[in-house]
Image 1 (cartoon, rainbow, N blue to C red):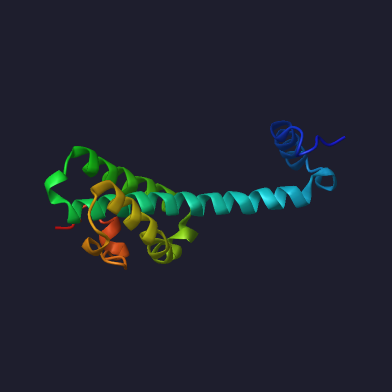
Image 2: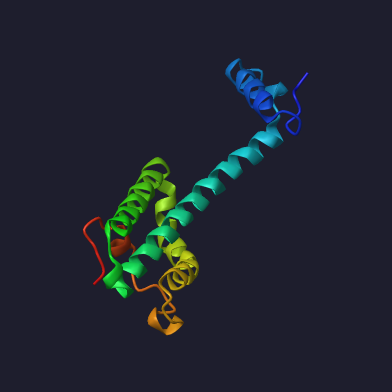
Length: 143
């Protein structure tokens, strides 16, 4: 008897993995497995977007509040770029989506940067001032 997905996810996952490995395909929970796989893909895309938002937030602060530049901002930018590179390496099909995600995440990053810096909204552009190449370039630091 199959363990119910809702009552014990771990047991359900282990049981379905064992069924897949043993070739007992007629016993697997096909619909729920398909949904989980789709959710995994969405999760990777959300993680990429989150790292892009962090990256953009710190690039904005770097550019528009130069008097506060420091090691922590530099490390945040470097760490975000490394995380983004890892996600793209692990899921190369996400690479074509980076440009759209960069633009989707920009308003949130701008809002965070404005909140953190205390600068007026007119201090930062309404549209992303960085292209994908700049944002992901390990040697790029906006001046």
